[in-house]
Length: 258
Image (cartoon, rainbow, N blue to C red; front, side):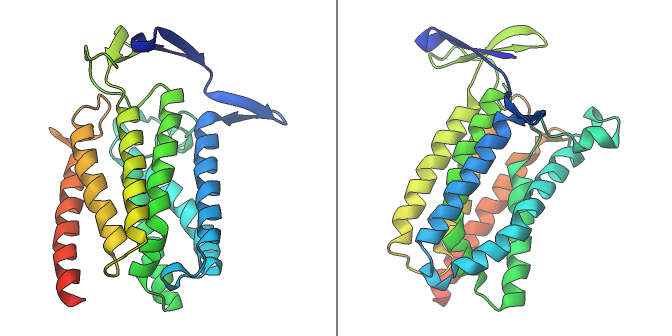
């Protein structure tokens, strides 16, 4: 049972990471948020069939491969940069308390989607523009799984919207960085939906997402208390900086080309 204190509203929340049991199997809130975001995305893709020339049937086929690959790559990314906390292979496989790195999922998903498009002779940029807005929405929803697990929070703060969590040092009031990113991801989603209505060139939606998300993640990661590290550097900040520069150069190149 996790206890979370919200001083701003004088509320104390006690929440079990396990929502319920199904035939004796624990169903976690984290998984429910992920499944809900996937369901919303698939419904949206169905309603927007043929947008940018992408057929819903191709999305179904891609999803059967991309979803498991993204989960696996998100876990591998997290474990590789957090090896010191694992003593057995079974621990590495255990994701009931979280431990998925979104950048790992994005990288694995992007490679999978590119290979899928190459095999089917589809436009990768059109497919990415079609898919990516609801990836952002899914991130906004999924961050609430971090809230339930009392994880992905920031450093100590005295700001009015601080969040109280119990750490190894006892009760601490910290930045609710999960909330910062959830709000930011939802605003990015709204921006991408607006751009989708009047797209100027292939890849615009994808590159806008990469630029906006990497910029926001760079600053939010600086507040995190549980960042994956590479020596003295925060790995997500390194990846964010690289993706931001790639997006800028690609935007300039595609505008000139198209």
